[in-house]
Image 1 (cartoon, rainbow, N blue to C red):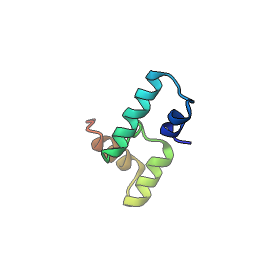
Image 2: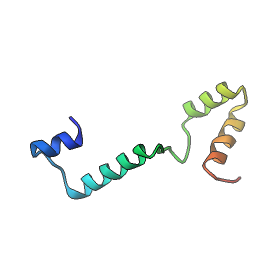
Image 3: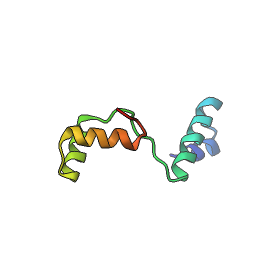
Image 4: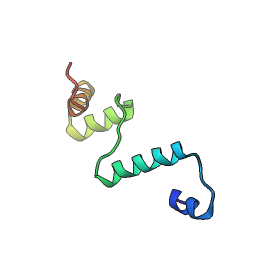
Length: 70
């Protein structure tokens, strides 16, 4: 059951929760995704495997894509 379906049935949460869900939905609708600021070990390994690079390079690429330097 989606949030909109729950709203139609009267099973609603707080206004703050609805606003948060609407914001997350708008982010997804815009083509953006939310990602963790620190990649998991599995994410690093997947990037290393995909790029045929070391885990350190995969981690550096991830941070660069987030606009971090160091």
